[in-house]
Amino acid sequence: MIASNKDRYFIDLFAGCGGLSLGLEQAGFIPVLVNEISPDAMETYLLNRDDEFPLLRDKYNIGDIKDLVSNESLFSGLICSMLNDYGIDINKGELDLLVGGPPCQGYSGIGHRRSYAVDKSDLPSNHLYLDMITLIVKFKPKIFLFENVKGILSGRWTANGDKGEIWNAVLSAFKRIAGYTVRWKLVHAKDYGVPQNRPRVLLVGVRNDIITDVSLPDDAIKAGFLPKPTYDYPDLTELLSDLVDKGFQYGEKNSNYIESPQNDFQNMLRTNKNGNLMDKGHRLSEQEYGNHTDRVIEKFTYMLSNNGEIPDKYKTKKFAQKVLPPTWGVNGPTITACCLPDDYVHFSQPRILTVREWARLQMFPDWYEFAGKRTTGGIRRAGNPREGVYDRELPKYTQIGNAVPVTLAKKVGLNLYRILEDSDA
Image (cartoon, rainbow, N blue to C red; front, side, top):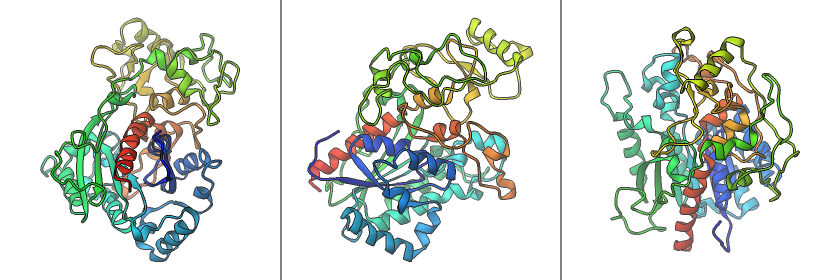
């Protein structure tokens, strides 16, 4: 974290279970307001911050962003409260950072295609970036950050639309915000210490009184708005070897660590909020094993022994499952963990990853807890846009899969923090 004489505050919109926020907190920012419409994801966010930031649960959490956008009395009340509780004068532009990653169900196409085919222009979630822009104008942050999936770059509003028209609309809208210089970049999480490829579009806007050089390169990294890659990702054995239990039982769980940490990555993930290392025998959460059928176990066992090959008798209409590699090749991580844990088979055992292992793929520390169901499926997870059903359950695997990787968020946060410190704003 960068040393500073002042506190730096941020607002997180569409916060999910808090991956982006956690990384920003690790970089030195303090959350003052959270927006998240899913009750499960909101509870995950809050329960991990109750000790450090109790005001978030008490008064600074908003479920529906529409309330924040359209309810003027609510907004005015928040401005007054922030001045009293944090000393932030929103009207004077004293908020440091506003971030948001509007839901990507329609942009990515994966969950969209797996469920129901509707025009992306008809999905309300695809227009939430406009609400984010409205709040940028109202909150006047020194910096804002928009995050989304790679698919937004090539998306069409309708089947007959032009490739890339969604991104053209989004980018143009952000560039029209008066008083900001905007730069963006498609980055890959693996380039910033995350054991996933996970391409993400990051767009940064810096207020023109913070940075006055509007002739900066269009590339956000070259412009200094985003950090340079560090290429320090772990292999999966480095990440997960301390959690491998040779005597595991399907449908059972480990409630305590069976091994001590074995490398620096594991030391980091097993350090709790008080700075203490959680060693062998310490409580471990979310290490529950899937209760697979004999047929699934037989299939996974075959795949582990045959370089991931799936025999015809085991093939289904689902997306092809892959065996996770214990070490990456020369090109680094190739996976992107989304919402379905059964997309991947553990690199050394015939099973899917546990929730805790899934969380480590996103670089959540082991002290981070998750609320809600372990998993769910069908319409409960995907909704039914054709019938106007947009509400979806967010089980733990889905919350984690939707999150911004914590290490990526931290490195982006450190760079944004530096911009603010260099400007002395």
